[in-house]
Length: 163
Ligand code: RP5
Image 1 (cartoon, rainbow, N blue to C red):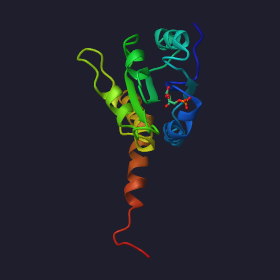
Image 2: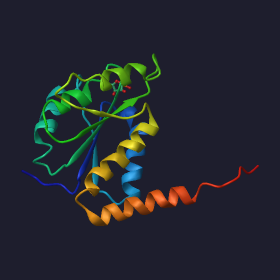
Image 3: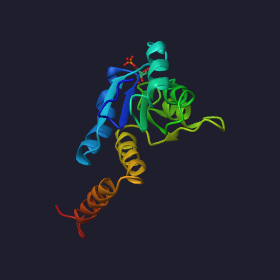
């Protein structure tokens, strides 16, 4: 099976999810973690989803970030077909502001976990950071980059507010 350069797969249900999900890609770029981003829809391209989920380990992925909105079954469906860690990002929906996405992703029955992040861009960004933290457990250089990244963010916080 083809082995890609990406250790993290960022998948999403629609092109419309990309403005949210690219926050995960951006933080992985900053941490120099290879990733691939793909559109994989549970209901529009179910065969693609099954092929992706079953083939993810063989493709060389270690962590999967899956974002979807509305009736957001994508992360749970993928988690049911792989033992790789799946991080779910609830994309903010128009009708219910992402509460539908959140509840669809977070309420997995016991046995098939999806690590669910916050609704929207913050969730996508944190999914990228969480994926990096998982990989850093067995990658000392990445662990140092992650610690440096966090230290830089702390150092950038001023002590007093400015006008
Ligand atoms: C879900 O439906 C996608 O994850 C997206 O968040 C939502 C709306 O998709 P589009 O109609 O914009 O393609 O499948």
